[in-house]
Structures are given as C-alpha cells and as structure tokens.
Length: 209
Image 1 (cartoon, helix red, strand yellow):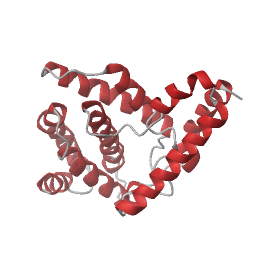
Image 2 (image 1 turned 30 degrees about the vertical axis):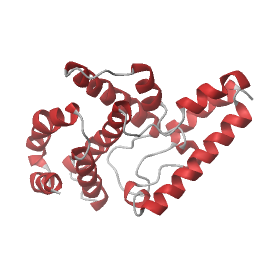
Image 3 (image 1 turned 90 degrees about the vertical axis):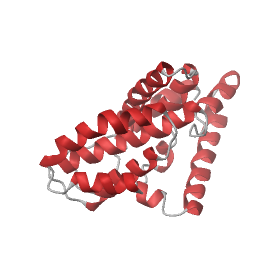
C-alpha cells in the first residue's frame, strides 16, 4: 500500500508498448515515450523563454513526466482510434481520469493526495505549459513514425500518425512550433528522401491543412 504501490506501478509503463498490433522495427514503451516528451518539452520551453515567455518549470515537469500515467489502467490506445470522435475521446478520458482518481484515493497517503491529484491530472490545456506538453507529445509521434517510415515500414498507421501529428502541431501557438517547422522539420524531410513513400509530399499536404 501507499507510495510503494505507486513506485512499483511505474514498472508497468515499461511493459506497455505504443501503437500495439502493428509491425514495428523498433518497439517503444510508454515509459520511454514519457522520458522523450520531457526532453522535447524542456527544449521547447527554452525556446519560449528566449522569446520572453515566462515558464512555470515545476508545472511543466510535473505534467510532462506524468502525462501518460493513466495508461497503466487502459493501455495505449492508437491515436486514430482515440480521436475517432470527440465523444469517444471524452469517454476514454473520463475512464482514465476516474481510474487514476480511484488509485489515488486507494493507495496514496492523505497528506500527499492533493499533490498527486495535481501531478496526475490532464495537463494539456491552453496554458503555455499545457501547449508545450501537447506539442512535445505530438513531436514524439512524428519521430516514432518517421523512424519506421525511414526503415521501409509502409504500414499506413505510421503515415497517418505522422500526418496527424504535424497537423496538430501546426495549429498550436508557440514560438517553439515556429522553430520546429522552420528549422527542424526541413532537416527531417531531407533525411526522409530514403523513405519508400514521398515524405515531402505528405509533409506539404499536412502543413497545408
């Protein structure tokens, strides 16, 4: 019981594989994804600060490092399924948040409950930290999909993942998004000439949407 249960549960994130059911050259766990999201977010926040934006670093690290903890209870649901409709997305979020709340109520000591409720909440919102989390999460989808496509994996799932992530990133208002689109994405696309699909065309189509 108590924090032992929470600490022990973190091992489960290492065993939950992202994008289940599809052939992949390289498996990615939810735990590895969370670590990468923190790294993307840290860099994006640095770019925002360079433009005079104030960052709540404590909040940023809390929401990025814990943003997928709820997948311990429901697993990783593929993005096209999760976002099939607003109703389905809302229901899945309700279930996930309910199970996290139940876990906190059952296992976390009373004096720490308010902290865990804050840290394990849904962090994607219109605050600068929430937008950074959203972009960082989508950036990892871009790079996971790109890694597979570059190796010759022609599963349509990864084309869809890549395209949808770019569409979402482009819609978010951040200096870091401008930096990614103008100074990082061109390098990625240039490297993607080795892909068996036309990555440049897919990228242009996504950015035109």
